[in-house]
Length: 434
Image (cartoon, rainbow, N blue to C red; front, side):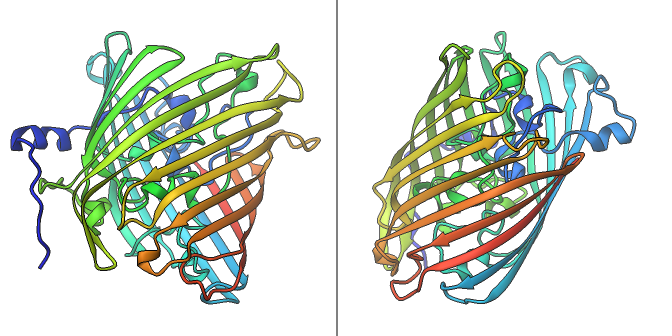
């Protein structure tokens, strides 16, 4: 029998904190690319507040002034593990469908600054990363089992207050949209600087710092919670959130229709700042955050009373090929993280990447990039001391909002066991936004 640890939190306050959720200041523009932009997130359902482009709603007669937005995405990939890992020379296949409905309540029922959103998620996949013996995840689509799931992914109320200095989102949400999101681009006034994602890498660490895996809710385990975001200027924000933390005890919170109030909470805060540098106004951003998981955690025969950690991230446009004309150029990012846990999979992490946009003549929407993700793993769980992911990709714009992306991943030291040989895998991913 599991021993429950009660938290010194008044039940009424705890209930209010878990039922309510609030969105970060990032505008909806970050969720859909301008028509002439290149480079999308490898999993927009994991990193963007609004899913898809809204084309589905427009096809059904809901124009941009109707107050109704219908969109979504489908991602399918096929991967082959050439060598190494736990099951070499094997195929893996994954499919993700997300349907998104967003209602502008100011237009529909005259509630100033209010928005309502509902998302449905369907995933059918296979244990891709496990077959390669990769602990931190070289393919971000499959997560914990069950690998066939239908779920209410999101259900939230978003409210802008005090001239948008405070933005509140209530309901079931995905905290990785709002916190530790290194691939989210800056909102910029110059459209020639606009990109919908800093990177198209498909490995899990670019979406969730490995020192947070197993505690922080996100794709596809969303959770009920509250986030408070204060935006005093366009360049500065301060956010704080509290969520249902039962993911840390193995609960698949994404499959839960209602929140739980049993002493397990995930709390996180982040401060971020953005800037423009150089004569050509290259945008950059940096953020630092701290988190705490409340409740008794257990793994590998070890029990601990909660866990806590720190993280930081930064991204910078490094070079512009045609300043003032388009978004072609190069961007880079950096991530770090640390925690004090004896039960989570990783206790330190460093990651970095670089992305080139629109550098191939005649291919303005294509992008390419590479990244490295190094995690120091929990040896109490039988893992190696560390694990390094090396990944590169080329994201091809086919037509409309369809992208095809080959990805090559090499893991010299798969972390699941010290006995595993280096793993090399190719993944072909097709993304359709609508």
